[in-house]
Image 1 (cartoon, rainbow over the protein chains, first blue to last red):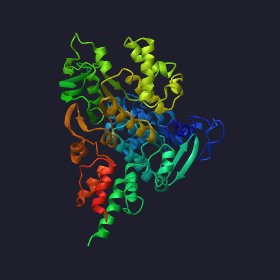
Image 2: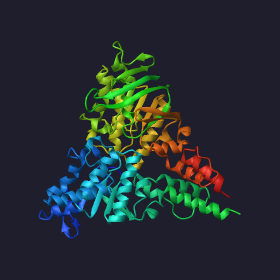
Image 3: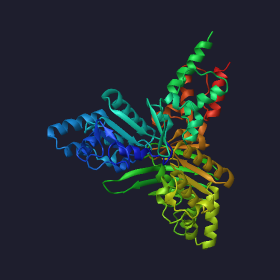
Image 4: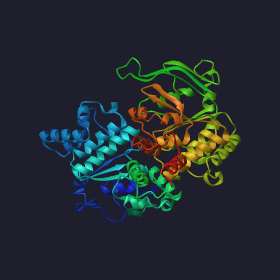
Length: 244
Length: 282
Protein backbone atom coordinates (compact mmCIF):
# COMPACT_ATOMS: atom_id res chain seq x y z
CA UNK A 1 0.00 0.00 0.00
CA UNK A 2 1.04 3.61 -0.27
CA UNK A 3 0.09 6.96 -1.77
CA UNK A 4 0.52 7.70 -5.48
CA UNK A 5 4.24 8.20 -6.01
CA UNK A 6 5.29 6.42 -2.80
CA UNK A 7 7.46 3.92 -4.70
CA UNK A 8 5.29 0.78 -4.79
CA UNK A 9 5.64 0.06 -8.51
CA UNK A 10 9.34 0.90 -8.45
CA UNK A 11 9.89 -1.57 -5.63
CA UNK A 12 7.82 -4.19 -7.43
CA UNK A 13 9.90 -3.81 -10.59
CA UNK A 14 13.06 -4.23 -8.51
CA UNK A 15 11.81 -7.56 -7.17
CA UNK A 16 12.30 -9.35 -10.50
CA UNK A 17 15.02 -7.21 -11.97
CA UNK A 18 12.90 -5.17 -14.37
CA UNK A 19 14.63 -2.31 -12.57
CA UNK A 20 18.01 -2.45 -10.87
CA UNK A 21 18.30 -0.38 -7.72
CA UNK A 22 20.78 2.50 -7.73
CA UNK A 23 22.10 1.16 -4.46
CA UNK A 24 21.30 -1.92 -2.45
CA UNK A 25 20.65 -5.49 -3.58
CA UNK A 26 17.65 -7.62 -4.37
CA UNK A 27 18.19 -11.34 -3.80
CA UNK A 28 15.61 -13.90 -4.93
CA UNK A 29 16.26 -17.44 -3.64
CA UNK A 30 19.93 -16.59 -3.41
CA UNK A 31 20.07 -15.05 -6.91
CA UNK A 32 21.11 -11.40 -7.17
CA UNK A 33 18.95 -9.49 -9.68
CA UNK A 34 22.05 -7.52 -10.71
CA UNK A 35 23.74 -10.68 -12.01
CA UNK A 36 23.02 -10.89 -15.77
CA UNK A 37 23.87 -14.60 -15.73
CA UNK A 38 20.87 -15.45 -13.54
CA UNK A 39 18.35 -12.71 -14.37
CA UNK A 40 16.15 -15.07 -16.39
CA UNK A 41 16.07 -17.53 -13.52
CA UNK A 42 14.91 -14.63 -11.31
CA UNK A 43 12.16 -13.61 -13.75
CA UNK A 44 11.00 -17.21 -14.01
CA UNK A 45 10.59 -17.25 -10.23
CA UNK A 46 8.94 -13.84 -9.83
CA UNK A 47 6.19 -12.94 -12.31
CA UNK A 48 4.28 -9.66 -12.61
CA UNK A 49 0.73 -8.79 -13.63
CA UNK A 50 0.12 -5.14 -14.47
CA UNK A 51 -2.85 -2.81 -14.27
CA UNK A 52 -4.14 -2.66 -17.81
CA UNK A 53 -5.55 -6.00 -18.99
CA UNK A 54 -5.33 -4.84 -22.60
CA UNK A 55 -1.57 -4.31 -22.59
CA UNK A 56 -0.37 -7.72 -21.48
CA UNK A 57 -1.60 -10.35 -23.89
CA UNK A 58 0.43 -10.77 -27.07
CA UNK A 59 -0.94 -13.77 -28.98
CA UNK A 60 -4.19 -14.08 -30.95
CA UNK A 61 -5.31 -17.25 -29.15
CA UNK A 62 -5.47 -17.69 -25.37
CA UNK A 63 -3.41 -20.90 -25.20
CA UNK A 64 -0.70 -19.48 -27.44
CA UNK A 65 -0.41 -16.51 -25.14
CA UNK A 66 0.06 -18.76 -22.13
CA UNK A 67 2.61 -20.85 -24.06
CA UNK A 68 4.73 -17.80 -24.89
CA UNK A 69 6.86 -17.96 -21.72
CA UNK A 70 7.54 -21.70 -21.61
CA UNK A 71 8.34 -21.67 -25.35
CA UNK A 72 11.02 -19.09 -24.63
CA UNK A 73 12.44 -21.41 -21.99
CA UNK A 74 13.06 -23.89 -24.82
CA UNK A 75 11.03 -26.68 -23.18
CA UNK A 76 9.94 -29.79 -25.14
CA UNK A 77 6.50 -29.29 -26.69
CA UNK A 78 4.81 -32.02 -24.60
CA UNK A 79 5.99 -30.24 -21.47
CA UNK A 80 4.76 -26.89 -22.82
CA UNK A 81 1.34 -28.34 -23.58
CA UNK A 82 1.12 -29.80 -20.10
CA UNK A 83 2.11 -26.53 -18.44
CA UNK A 84 -0.35 -24.50 -20.50
CA UNK A 85 -3.18 -26.91 -19.68
CA UNK A 86 -2.32 -26.90 -15.96
CA UNK A 87 -2.07 -23.12 -15.82
CA UNK A 88 -5.35 -22.50 -17.67
CA UNK A 89 -7.16 -25.00 -15.43
CA UNK A 90 -5.84 -23.39 -12.26
CA UNK A 91 -7.14 -19.95 -13.25
CA UNK A 92 -10.43 -21.40 -14.55
CA UNK A 93 -9.85 -20.42 -18.19
CA UNK A 94 -9.44 -23.88 -19.76
CA UNK A 95 -12.72 -23.68 -21.70
CA UNK A 96 -11.49 -20.42 -23.23
CA UNK A 97 -8.18 -21.85 -24.50
CA UNK A 98 -9.09 -21.37 -28.17
CA UNK A 99 -10.67 -17.93 -27.70
CA UNK A 100 -9.25 -14.65 -28.88
CA UNK A 101 -7.91 -12.68 -25.90
CA UNK A 102 -9.37 -9.34 -27.03
CA UNK A 103 -12.91 -10.74 -26.76
CA UNK A 104 -12.52 -11.68 -23.08
CA UNK A 105 -13.67 -9.57 -20.13
CA UNK A 106 -11.10 -7.65 -18.07
CA UNK A 107 -11.10 -10.24 -15.28
CA UNK A 108 -10.67 -13.05 -17.79
CA UNK A 109 -7.77 -11.25 -19.47
CA UNK A 110 -6.04 -10.80 -16.14
CA UNK A 111 -6.52 -14.48 -15.35
CA UNK A 112 -4.95 -15.39 -18.70
CA UNK A 113 -2.04 -13.09 -17.85
CA UNK A 114 -1.72 -14.92 -14.52
CA UNK A 115 -1.82 -18.27 -16.35
CA UNK A 116 1.04 -17.09 -18.58
CA UNK A 117 3.11 -16.53 -15.46
CA UNK A 118 2.02 -19.81 -13.84
CA UNK A 119 3.24 -21.67 -16.91
CA UNK A 120 6.73 -20.51 -15.89
CA UNK A 121 6.22 -22.34 -12.55
CA UNK A 122 7.00 -19.24 -10.48
CA UNK A 123 7.48 -18.98 -6.72
CA UNK A 124 6.01 -15.50 -6.44
CA UNK A 125 3.33 -13.50 -8.22
CA UNK A 126 3.29 -9.71 -8.05
CA UNK A 127 0.04 -7.93 -8.92
CA UNK A 128 0.71 -4.24 -9.57
CA UNK A 129 -2.78 -2.76 -9.21
CA UNK A 130 -3.98 -5.65 -11.36
CA UNK A 131 -7.55 -5.22 -10.11
CA UNK A 132 -7.78 -1.42 -10.51
CA UNK A 133 -9.45 -1.40 -13.93
CA UNK A 134 -11.81 -4.32 -13.35
CA UNK A 135 -15.52 -4.38 -12.56
CA UNK A 136 -16.66 -5.97 -9.27
CA UNK A 137 -16.97 -9.41 -10.88
CA UNK A 138 -13.53 -9.18 -12.49
CA UNK A 139 -11.98 -8.16 -9.18
CA UNK A 140 -13.58 -11.10 -7.45
CA UNK A 141 -12.30 -13.51 -10.12
CA UNK A 142 -8.74 -12.27 -9.77
CA UNK A 143 -8.80 -12.14 -5.96
CA UNK A 144 -10.26 -15.66 -5.73
CA UNK A 145 -7.65 -16.94 -8.17
CA UNK A 146 -4.67 -15.53 -6.30
CA UNK A 147 -6.07 -16.64 -2.93
CA UNK A 148 -6.26 -20.19 -4.28
CA UNK A 149 -2.75 -20.03 -5.76
CA UNK A 150 -1.46 -18.96 -2.38
CA UNK A 151 -3.37 -21.58 -0.41
CA UNK A 152 -3.14 -24.58 -2.74
CA UNK A 153 0.09 -24.03 -4.67
CA UNK A 154 2.05 -22.21 -1.99
CA UNK A 155 2.80 -19.30 -4.31
CA UNK A 156 3.81 -16.05 -2.62
CA UNK A 157 1.47 -13.19 -3.54
CA UNK A 158 2.45 -9.53 -3.47
CA UNK A 159 -0.67 -7.50 -4.20
CA UNK A 160 -0.23 -3.76 -4.73
CA UNK A 161 -3.55 -2.00 -4.32
CA UNK A 162 -5.28 1.24 -3.39
CA UNK A 163 -8.38 -0.73 -2.37
CA UNK A 164 -8.17 -1.10 1.38
CA UNK A 165 -10.89 -3.78 1.36
CA UNK A 166 -8.48 -5.86 -0.74
CA UNK A 167 -5.47 -5.13 1.46
CA UNK A 168 -7.27 -6.60 4.49
CA UNK A 169 -7.32 -9.98 2.73
CA UNK A 170 -3.52 -10.23 3.07
CA UNK A 171 -1.72 -11.83 5.99
CA UNK A 172 0.87 -9.05 6.06
CA UNK A 173 0.66 -5.46 4.89
CA UNK A 174 3.56 -3.24 3.95
CA UNK A 175 3.19 0.48 3.34
CA UNK A 176 5.59 2.82 1.60
CA UNK A 177 5.71 6.59 1.92
CA UNK A 178 8.12 8.82 0.04
CA UNK A 179 10.20 5.82 -0.99
CA UNK A 180 10.58 4.46 2.55
CA UNK A 181 9.07 1.44 4.22
CA UNK A 182 6.87 2.89 6.99
CA UNK A 183 4.69 -0.01 8.04
CA UNK A 184 5.09 -3.79 7.97
CA UNK A 185 2.64 -5.69 10.13
CA UNK A 186 -0.60 -7.67 10.22
CA UNK A 187 -3.74 -6.08 8.74
CA UNK A 188 -5.33 -6.18 12.21
CA UNK A 189 -2.70 -3.90 13.68
CA UNK A 190 -2.21 -1.78 10.52
CA UNK A 191 -5.92 -0.96 10.32
CA UNK A 192 -6.31 -0.34 14.04
CA UNK A 193 -4.76 3.14 13.77
CA UNK A 194 -6.85 5.43 11.52
CA UNK A 195 -4.74 8.54 12.23
CA UNK A 196 -1.54 6.94 11.04
CA UNK A 197 -3.31 5.67 7.91
CA UNK A 198 -4.54 9.16 7.15
CA UNK A 199 -1.00 10.52 7.46
CA UNK A 200 0.07 7.94 4.88
CA UNK A 201 -2.77 9.06 2.52
CA UNK A 202 -4.41 5.70 3.13
CA UNK A 203 -7.79 5.05 4.73
CA UNK A 204 -9.73 2.53 6.74
CA UNK A 205 -11.57 -0.04 4.64
CA UNK A 206 -15.37 0.50 4.90
CA UNK A 207 -15.89 -2.30 7.45
CA UNK A 208 -13.09 -1.09 9.72
CA UNK A 209 -14.41 2.47 9.46
CA UNK A 210 -17.83 1.22 10.55
CA UNK A 211 -16.34 -0.69 13.48
CA UNK A 212 -14.41 2.42 14.51
CA UNK A 213 -17.62 4.50 14.40
CA UNK A 214 -19.55 1.90 16.40
CA UNK A 215 -16.88 1.72 19.10
CA UNK A 216 -16.65 5.48 19.30
CA UNK A 217 -20.42 5.47 19.92
CA UNK A 218 -19.94 3.00 22.79
CA UNK A 219 -20.78 -0.33 21.14
CA UNK A 220 -18.05 -2.79 22.22
CA UNK A 221 -17.55 -4.71 18.95
CA UNK A 222 -15.43 -7.75 19.87
CA UNK A 223 -12.25 -8.76 18.05
CA UNK A 224 -10.76 -6.93 15.08
CA UNK A 225 -13.26 -7.38 12.22
CA UNK A 226 -11.95 -6.20 8.83
CA UNK A 227 -14.23 -8.01 6.40
CA UNK A 228 -18.01 -8.10 6.01
CA UNK A 229 -18.15 -11.71 7.22
CA UNK A 230 -16.03 -10.96 10.29
CA UNK A 231 -18.18 -7.99 11.29
CA UNK A 232 -21.40 -9.96 10.85
CA UNK A 233 -19.99 -12.67 13.18
CA UNK A 234 -18.85 -10.10 15.72
CA UNK A 235 -22.29 -8.42 15.77
CA UNK A 236 -23.99 -11.79 16.06
CA UNK A 237 -21.80 -12.52 19.08
CA UNK A 238 -23.11 -9.32 20.71
CA UNK A 239 -26.66 -10.30 19.82
CA UNK A 240 -26.22 -13.81 21.26
CA UNK A 241 -24.75 -12.46 24.49
CA UNK A 242 -27.76 -10.13 24.89
CA UNK A 243 -30.35 -12.79 24.05
CA UNK A 244 -32.43 -13.79 27.08
CA UNK B 1 -31.92 18.46 -19.49
CA UNK B 2 -30.68 15.42 -21.38
CA UNK B 3 -33.25 13.19 -23.00
CA UNK B 4 -32.40 10.08 -24.98
CA UNK B 5 -34.99 8.09 -26.90
CA UNK B 6 -34.63 4.51 -28.05
CA UNK B 7 -30.87 4.67 -28.44
CA UNK B 8 -29.24 1.78 -30.24
CA UNK B 9 -25.58 1.51 -31.06
CA UNK B 10 -23.65 -1.13 -32.93
CA UNK B 11 -19.87 -0.92 -33.22
CA UNK B 12 -18.37 -2.03 -36.55
CA UNK B 13 -21.81 -2.73 -37.97
CA UNK B 14 -21.97 -5.19 -40.89
CA UNK B 15 -18.47 -6.50 -40.13
CA UNK B 16 -17.40 -9.79 -38.55
CA UNK B 17 -16.47 -7.84 -35.41
CA UNK B 18 -19.94 -6.28 -35.08
CA UNK B 19 -20.77 -5.64 -31.41
CA UNK B 20 -24.07 -4.31 -30.10
CA UNK B 21 -23.42 -1.79 -27.30
CA UNK B 22 -26.84 -0.18 -26.74
CA UNK B 23 -30.19 -1.88 -27.30
CA UNK B 24 -32.95 0.66 -26.99
CA UNK B 25 -32.05 3.00 -24.14
CA UNK B 26 -34.50 5.76 -23.20
CA UNK B 27 -34.04 8.06 -20.23
CA UNK B 28 -34.22 11.64 -19.02
CA UNK B 29 -31.66 13.33 -16.80
CA UNK B 30 -32.87 16.57 -15.28
CA UNK B 31 -30.86 19.66 -14.39
CA UNK B 32 -28.96 19.42 -11.14
CA UNK B 33 -29.32 15.68 -10.67
CA UNK B 34 -26.58 13.48 -9.23
CA UNK B 35 -26.66 10.26 -11.18
CA UNK B 36 -24.59 7.09 -10.79
CA UNK B 37 -24.23 4.90 -13.87
CA UNK B 38 -23.23 1.32 -13.11
CA UNK B 39 -23.03 -2.00 -14.93
CA UNK B 40 -20.60 -4.78 -15.77
CA UNK B 41 -17.74 -4.25 -18.25
CA UNK B 42 -19.21 -3.99 -21.74
CA UNK B 43 -22.70 -3.04 -20.54
CA UNK B 44 -22.62 0.17 -22.58
CA UNK B 45 -21.95 2.84 -19.92
CA UNK B 46 -19.15 4.67 -21.70
CA UNK B 47 -20.88 4.35 -25.07
CA UNK B 48 -24.05 5.88 -23.64
CA UNK B 49 -22.43 8.96 -22.12
CA UNK B 50 -20.46 9.64 -25.29
CA UNK B 51 -23.74 10.10 -27.14
CA UNK B 52 -24.89 12.77 -24.66
CA UNK B 53 -22.62 15.45 -26.07
CA UNK B 54 -22.43 14.18 -29.62
CA UNK B 55 -18.99 12.59 -29.42
CA UNK B 56 -20.48 9.35 -30.64
CA UNK B 57 -23.34 9.17 -33.12
CA UNK B 58 -25.63 6.27 -32.20
CA UNK B 59 -26.71 3.87 -34.92
CA UNK B 60 -30.32 4.74 -34.09
CA UNK B 61 -32.28 6.95 -31.73
CA UNK B 62 -32.38 10.57 -30.63
CA UNK B 63 -30.43 12.62 -28.09
CA UNK B 64 -31.98 15.91 -27.01
CA UNK B 65 -30.13 18.46 -24.90
CA UNK B 66 -32.50 21.14 -23.61
CA UNK B 67 -34.76 20.20 -26.50
CA UNK B 68 -32.07 20.51 -29.18
CA UNK B 69 -31.45 17.39 -31.27
CA UNK B 70 -27.71 16.81 -30.82
CA UNK B 71 -27.33 15.07 -34.17
CA UNK B 72 -29.48 17.38 -36.29
CA UNK B 73 -27.41 18.84 -39.15
CA UNK B 74 -28.05 22.39 -37.97
CA UNK B 75 -26.90 21.75 -34.40
CA UNK B 76 -23.66 23.35 -33.24
CA UNK B 77 -22.12 20.33 -31.53
CA UNK B 78 -19.18 22.36 -30.29
CA UNK B 79 -21.61 24.30 -28.19
CA UNK B 80 -23.18 21.08 -26.88
CA UNK B 81 -19.72 19.81 -25.91
CA UNK B 82 -19.07 23.02 -24.05
CA UNK B 83 -22.28 22.48 -22.06
CA UNK B 84 -21.77 18.78 -21.42
CA UNK B 85 -18.24 18.04 -20.30
CA UNK B 86 -16.93 14.50 -20.28
CA UNK B 87 -13.90 13.57 -18.22
CA UNK B 88 -12.58 10.28 -19.58
CA UNK B 89 -10.89 7.53 -17.59
CA UNK B 90 -7.32 8.37 -16.61
CA UNK B 91 -7.71 11.92 -17.98
CA UNK B 92 -4.23 12.90 -16.82
CA UNK B 93 -2.92 10.85 -19.76
CA UNK B 94 -4.35 13.56 -22.01
CA UNK B 95 -2.48 16.48 -20.48
CA UNK B 96 -0.03 17.75 -23.06
CA UNK B 97 0.83 21.44 -22.67
CA UNK B 98 4.06 22.81 -21.26
CA UNK B 99 2.41 24.48 -18.31
CA UNK B 100 -0.65 23.80 -16.18
CA UNK B 101 -2.06 27.23 -17.08
CA UNK B 102 -1.85 26.58 -20.83
CA UNK B 103 -3.31 23.09 -20.49
CA UNK B 104 -6.34 24.30 -18.56
CA UNK B 105 -6.81 27.28 -20.92
CA UNK B 106 -6.73 25.06 -24.01
CA UNK B 107 -10.51 24.46 -24.07
CA UNK B 108 -11.57 28.08 -23.59
CA UNK B 109 -9.02 29.21 -26.24
CA UNK B 110 -10.65 26.76 -28.64
CA UNK B 111 -14.04 28.27 -27.82
CA UNK B 112 -12.64 31.45 -29.35
CA UNK B 113 -12.01 33.33 -26.12
CA UNK B 114 -9.12 35.77 -26.05
CA UNK B 115 -5.84 34.73 -24.43
CA UNK B 116 -6.67 36.92 -21.45
CA UNK B 117 -10.18 35.57 -20.99
CA UNK B 118 -8.94 31.99 -21.38
CA UNK B 119 -6.20 32.58 -18.80
CA UNK B 120 -8.78 34.07 -16.43
CA UNK B 121 -11.01 31.03 -16.86
CA UNK B 122 -8.03 28.76 -16.22
CA UNK B 123 -7.16 30.51 -12.96
CA UNK B 124 -10.71 30.31 -11.80
CA UNK B 125 -11.00 26.62 -12.71
CA UNK B 126 -7.76 25.78 -10.90
CA UNK B 127 -9.09 27.50 -7.81
CA UNK B 128 -12.33 25.51 -8.13
CA UNK B 129 -10.44 22.20 -8.04
CA UNK B 130 -8.42 23.29 -5.02
CA UNK B 131 -5.13 24.09 -6.76
CA UNK B 132 -3.58 27.48 -6.02
CA UNK B 133 -3.23 29.11 -9.47
CA UNK B 134 -0.15 31.13 -8.48
CA UNK B 135 1.66 28.01 -7.41
CA UNK B 136 0.50 25.59 -10.11
CA UNK B 137 0.04 27.72 -13.27
CA UNK B 138 3.70 27.87 -14.35
CA UNK B 139 4.49 24.25 -13.55
CA UNK B 140 4.72 21.43 -16.05
CA UNK B 141 1.74 19.08 -15.65
CA UNK B 142 4.18 16.18 -15.70
CA UNK B 143 5.85 17.20 -12.44
CA UNK B 144 2.61 16.83 -10.48
CA UNK B 145 1.35 13.90 -8.43
CA UNK B 146 -1.33 11.59 -9.84
CA UNK B 147 -4.08 13.25 -7.81
CA UNK B 148 -2.95 16.76 -8.81
CA UNK B 149 -2.76 15.81 -12.49
CA UNK B 150 -6.30 14.52 -12.36
CA UNK B 151 -7.44 17.79 -10.78
CA UNK B 152 -5.73 19.72 -13.57
CA UNK B 153 -7.59 17.58 -16.11
CA UNK B 154 -10.85 18.33 -14.31
CA UNK B 155 -10.00 22.04 -14.26
CA UNK B 156 -9.55 21.79 -18.03
CA UNK B 157 -13.16 20.76 -18.51
CA UNK B 158 -14.52 23.13 -15.83
CA UNK B 159 -12.86 26.02 -17.67
CA UNK B 160 -15.42 25.43 -20.40
CA UNK B 161 -18.08 26.34 -17.82
CA UNK B 162 -20.24 23.30 -18.54
CA UNK B 163 -23.74 22.67 -17.18
CA UNK B 164 -23.26 18.92 -17.00
CA UNK B 165 -20.18 17.10 -15.75
CA UNK B 166 -19.75 13.43 -16.68
CA UNK B 167 -17.01 11.56 -14.84
CA UNK B 168 -15.98 8.13 -16.17
CA UNK B 169 -14.32 6.13 -13.34
CA UNK B 170 -13.05 9.36 -11.79
CA UNK B 171 -11.06 7.83 -8.93
CA UNK B 172 -9.52 4.78 -10.63
CA UNK B 173 -5.83 4.59 -9.78
CA UNK B 174 -5.92 7.30 -7.10
CA UNK B 175 -4.74 6.50 -3.57
CA UNK B 176 -7.42 6.34 -0.85
CA UNK B 177 -6.99 9.98 0.20
CA UNK B 178 -6.91 11.06 -3.43
CA UNK B 179 -10.18 9.17 -4.01
CA UNK B 180 -11.87 10.74 -0.99
CA UNK B 181 -10.65 14.24 -1.95
CA UNK B 182 -11.78 13.89 -5.56
CA UNK B 183 -15.26 12.70 -4.60
CA UNK B 184 -15.65 15.53 -2.10
CA UNK B 185 -14.57 17.94 -4.83
CA UNK B 186 -17.14 16.54 -7.28
CA UNK B 187 -19.90 16.91 -4.68
CA UNK B 188 -18.77 20.47 -3.88
CA UNK B 189 -18.84 21.43 -7.54
CA UNK B 190 -22.31 19.97 -7.85
CA UNK B 191 -23.54 21.90 -4.85
CA UNK B 192 -21.91 25.27 -5.53
CA UNK B 193 -21.93 25.46 -9.32
CA UNK B 194 -25.34 24.04 -9.87
CA UNK B 195 -23.95 21.31 -12.10
CA UNK B 196 -25.61 18.10 -13.16
CA UNK B 197 -23.27 15.29 -12.13
CA UNK B 198 -23.12 11.89 -13.86
CA UNK B 199 -20.62 9.41 -12.46
CA UNK B 200 -19.66 6.04 -13.96
CA UNK B 201 -18.06 3.77 -11.40
CA UNK B 202 -17.28 0.14 -10.60
CA UNK B 203 -17.14 0.99 -6.91
CA UNK B 204 -20.52 0.57 -5.27
CA UNK B 205 -19.21 2.34 -2.15
CA UNK B 206 -18.39 5.34 -4.31
CA UNK B 207 -21.76 5.32 -6.09
CA UNK B 208 -23.60 5.12 -2.76
CA UNK B 209 -21.68 8.17 -1.62
CA UNK B 210 -22.10 10.33 -4.71
CA UNK B 211 -25.39 9.51 -6.41
CA UNK B 212 -28.99 10.24 -5.48
CA UNK B 213 -30.21 8.25 -8.47
CA UNK B 214 -28.66 5.11 -9.96
CA UNK B 215 -29.07 3.79 -13.49
CA UNK B 216 -28.01 0.19 -14.01
CA UNK B 217 -27.05 -0.98 -17.50
CA UNK B 218 -26.72 -4.60 -18.52
CA UNK B 219 -25.81 -5.68 -22.04
CA UNK B 220 -26.93 -2.39 -23.51
CA UNK B 221 -30.25 -2.11 -21.68
CA UNK B 222 -31.40 -0.06 -18.69
CA UNK B 223 -32.36 -2.71 -16.12
CA UNK B 224 -32.83 -0.43 -13.10
CA UNK B 225 -33.34 3.31 -12.76
CA UNK B 226 -34.35 4.51 -9.34
CA UNK B 227 -33.32 6.36 -6.19
CA UNK B 228 -29.94 5.08 -4.97
CA UNK B 229 -31.51 3.65 -1.82
CA UNK B 230 -34.11 1.74 -3.82
CA UNK B 231 -31.53 0.32 -6.21
CA UNK B 232 -29.22 -0.95 -3.47
CA UNK B 233 -32.21 -2.53 -1.70
CA UNK B 234 -32.47 -4.92 -4.68
CA UNK B 235 -29.47 -6.90 -3.46
CA UNK B 236 -30.27 -10.17 -5.18
CA UNK B 237 -30.71 -8.64 -8.61
CA UNK B 238 -27.47 -6.69 -8.23
CA UNK B 239 -25.78 -9.90 -7.16
CA UNK B 240 -27.06 -11.60 -10.31
CA UNK B 241 -25.52 -8.80 -12.36
CA UNK B 242 -22.29 -9.36 -10.40
CA UNK B 243 -22.37 -5.77 -9.19
CA UNK B 244 -22.72 -6.35 -5.48
CA UNK B 245 -23.41 -3.77 -2.79
CA UNK B 246 -21.47 -1.20 -0.81
CA UNK B 247 -19.71 -3.03 2.02
CA UNK B 248 -21.79 -1.44 4.79
CA UNK B 249 -24.99 -2.50 2.99
CA UNK B 250 -23.58 -6.04 2.68
CA UNK B 251 -23.27 -6.15 6.48
CA UNK B 252 -26.94 -5.16 6.87
CA UNK B 253 -28.19 -7.62 4.27
CA UNK B 254 -26.26 -10.51 5.81
CA UNK B 255 -27.54 -9.69 9.30
CA UNK B 256 -31.06 -9.59 7.90
CA UNK B 257 -30.53 -12.98 6.24
CA UNK B 258 -29.62 -14.36 9.67
CA UNK B 259 -32.87 -13.08 11.11
CA UNK B 260 -31.63 -9.86 12.72
CA UNK B 261 -34.34 -7.19 12.30
CA UNK B 262 -32.19 -4.46 10.70
CA UNK B 263 -33.18 -2.10 7.91
CA UNK B 264 -31.42 -2.88 4.63
CA UNK B 265 -32.14 0.34 2.73
CA UNK B 266 -29.32 2.34 4.31
CA UNK B 267 -26.36 3.65 2.37
CA UNK B 268 -23.91 5.73 4.30
CA UNK B 269 -21.58 4.77 7.09
CA UNK B 270 -23.42 7.19 9.37
CA UNK B 271 -26.85 5.67 8.71
CA UNK B 272 -25.48 2.16 9.14
CA UNK B 273 -23.81 3.08 12.41
CA UNK B 274 -27.06 4.53 13.79
CA UNK B 275 -29.05 1.46 12.73
CA UNK B 276 -26.59 -1.01 14.24
CA UNK B 277 -26.54 0.98 17.48
CA UNK B 278 -30.34 0.89 17.56
CA UNK B 279 -30.37 -2.89 17.16
CA UNK B 280 -27.27 -3.94 19.11
CA UNK B 281 -26.79 -1.00 21.48
CA UNK B 282 -27.69 -1.20 25.18
